[in-house]
Length: 256
Image (cartoon, rainbow, N blue to C red; front, side, top):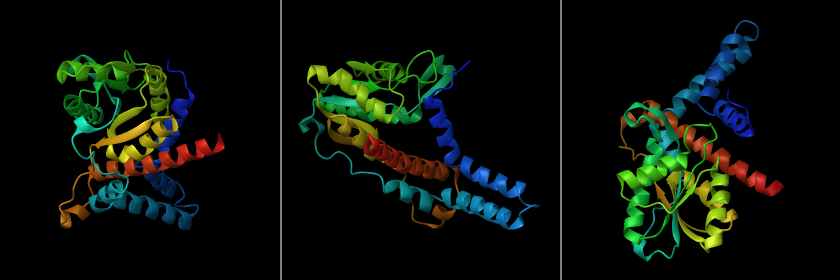
């Protein structure tokens, strides 16, 4: 039986506050109130339908996500004055049959691919970070290490396996890197996640050189960009998740 922790509570509340759950809840409220409070019911139904349509529209979703994305790393990685490459986990693919167990998700794989490219160009040592809050057979970082070494031929010097979120990624990485005198890092994560990640690592005492990857899809600029798609709804969810997460971190630091 899984023991409920603060991590689980935050994840559940976050899932309910973001699409599609929040939109489904609005639609459900509209259905429940339809007979007793028709005015409120219509408002909930309209909000749910409009939110679903707008959130699933690529022309809106991908442009919004792009607002969070910093420019890519400029110049030759070999000349970047960093001491190490830090790669953040982006999720786990559970019980993958072809890999006979848990492995890295598609998002994590995107980050690892770019980290491998940077390591080959710069020769910098690599740290992977990602914990195991759901009690799986192995941590996210362990799966990342295996993928980098076995599939990309890139050695991993440090494996941080306790972090449950981006803030803990930064704090736990500092516990490993500070004793060996490493402060200036190339930070690898998705472009939309970079503002929050860079803020967390800077607050932990690192000098961060952003190395973003996985940029939002480029739009074709035609009528099809205005037709709802499932992938656009995921982009909207990512935009809201990062925006709310950034604000939450700022609030936490303000209250400390």
